[in-house]
Length: 357
Image (cartoon, rainbow, N blue to C red):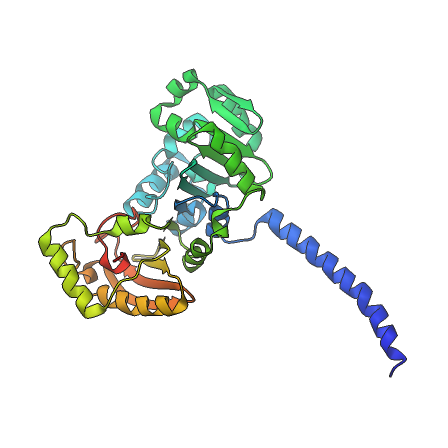
């Protein structure tokens, strides 16, 4: 037995080296192909300082609506109308300019895998992953014709170009970068923010997913066709009952007396999944510990039934089939949603069960 040991080790060492080499090659190949979920890829493209992030999975939406590539004028019109009616484009920067962008830029939301948009103190950015049907060389040629000039990674729209594309698109797409390897277009509200976002995408800077509570909320929203993630303070102010009057304040106080005390989350989010005919919507909140999350799942589940405090009617008029729970430090409330009876992806409006103290 003692004589066989070295022989076994001699075999194991090269096998281990080979396994590590193959594993490294697989990891690099997977990273190049970006086999992660669309939501993970999108949020990982935004800088760590992002406080509000919106996400739209255009490929999934086109598929769910039965539009294929939406490569015709009729298909693009149907995408605009149907996705808007079902609250799937609310988090998009360019979802209402599909025909206009197709005419001017040669691509639009109809040609994207996904789009994400984030706001931070340092700037705002949109990152859009182009589908394989789009020629990046053609994209750059169009930019030159529209009056963009290039310096390094940054394409800047000229004054004449701004007049040609109009104020809305000039504001959204005034400063761009086109990254060939990643097949993404980056658009920012100021030129100095372009290299920040490009550096994040290339792995030179930390992304929003390096912020643990944001990553945890994003994980609980995996598979969403549209999503929003909000940092400290933003989720609280967006769902607040402030300014709704003394009656609403009294109703909220009575509800909290029955349900229990609300704790302030560190990050919040909500995600929408298209269905036929109903959708699924998830409200997620990250808390300091699993114990707090479990307690808040119980409290918020009680608040997610009955009169819709701060709004008309009952919560069950639009949100049914409640499933509440906690995974680690994240609380989730998942509902079936009739989009004809309520829309929630703006991230705004009184919402006691997703709110703060």
